[in-house]
Length: 155
Length: 242
Image (cartoon, rainbow over all chains, first blue to last red; front, side, top):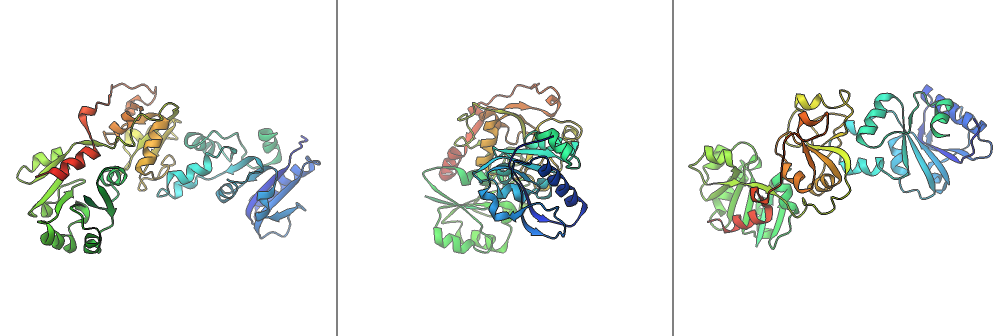
């Protein structure tokens, strides 16, 4: 499926493991199917040798980006909350961070998760249900973050 | 008039911190700095919290100052028998505890509500959330746990208890945030009367656990100001207590 959008993928760190192999494969496919749009990774720490020839800019450049942002960590969602040029932010959620810090203030979670332009993509049905109950209904489920799954949800 | 209140995380103290009166109410941590705070502020009234007051410092202070300063001790749960023996000290406790100890100088705590923040202002647009404040319990009631995910997908949001680990426990709130939440939510899940009157004042539909499947209240609750007293009035009464 061809698409035509400018998309930034925010990874605070890029590790050398299967999960990140999969993410980068999907982004590569995204670029192949999106020849007109601009696609870039914003990253702060990179531990990988092979990055599939995807353009990588430092994380600090993300705030100047125009388009959609794909986020993979809570830190990315916090960081990009006040970026003014972003159309939509998609947070790929596979954990429930508030469960690990029950002594945190509700307002700090609400500020992040109930931002106007933030959408959730859930990693499984349980995560989908929990985000729907606690915050907002995710726009879809993508178990492996493959290009096929992603394109069904966002294109 | 200055009132010094011992800092503690309970509903009574948290609300005293948030009320606006003609008096100056200062909530401070008094551990190991009671005399320092006393000489800094020179309060006419001090309210201690019983769970933090059975210390040498507080007992010595009460023995030194209970004639010049009006001293109250707030008993949150059980009455502290040692503190009850202190002369020239008033005790604040719920009416059941006061009845059980008629020989002591105990002022019954009415159903207090902070009407300055828990009221019907700004309650027009409500979402479908079911709010449940669990700050006073140590364990989730079994009946409630059976109504949470994964047993159901009801939009029940639990708040304010770091001891309870559950996906639907969404963190801590101060009193103002509780009022904002109750004003913006349609339902309040009542597991006892803790915050019941606040929820009614904020226009919430009160549900019992058995009402959850169909979201219809089986019991009529109504907010009647005659059954409650504002913190401001209560403080006035304490000031004039003889």
